[in-house]
Image (cartoon, rainbow, N blue to C red; front, side, top):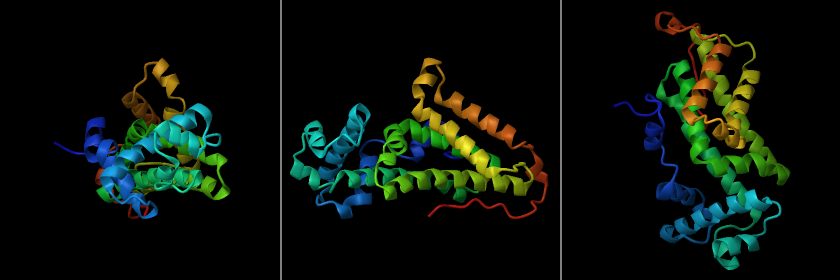
Amino acid sequence: MASWPFEISAESFRKAWLLEGEPFWRSVFEMHKDKMQIKNPKVAIVNLEKIFTATFHLANSKGFQAMSLRDLSRETGISMGGLYAYIGSKNDLASVIEGVLRKYVDQVIGGLASENLEPVDCLRAIVYGELYMMEILNPWYYFCFMELKGLPREQQQRSLDLELRFEGILIDAFQAGVASGQFTCEKPELLAALVTAQLQQWHLKHWKFKLRNIGTQEYAQFVYDNLLLCLSFREGVAAGAEPEIEPKIRQLA
């Protein structure tokens, strides 16, 4: 049985990428343990989950800017001193959230470059993979889109960079398809921005799709099919044609 990204399904994605439960929180700990006073992973993992889950709840209910660390202490049941063992400030907390999401965008979506996929298959994995991640990491995506813009300029720029990194992956896939003769794309930057906005709707306006009984698979297929129309996809061209230049899809470091 094929595995992700050669089999495109929510099940194969979840098997390939553990973005929930203890494995996920352990990865968050490993990413930021050098900045924390707590070094015992068994203790840290439990409290990290409490801290971030409470942060997302408070940010949604009263806004991250209005939230205080004292609010976070009450919500988590962790003392102020205990919180400082994990985070130095609210800005540090926001930086961790952005850093975790950036890591997984780079690994899950940027990592498709190493899978030797045809451009059309790579685009399908990008669209479906991003929506699967949004489904699982919805609070992280929503926070980075809505809350980072109210933080200091440096952190605002990180939010913009995260979006541009994703668009860069799309652009490289478009260009690889053009080089192989499968796609036509005169304005890749505009098309990448359009697709990114379509995907962002899934976590920003999910209530609308729920109201209309539209599921993840249906929406992913809709975005993907329309993307191929925009690219004037020519099926079968790459199989018997010599590409004009070697197709390359940049892998983000």
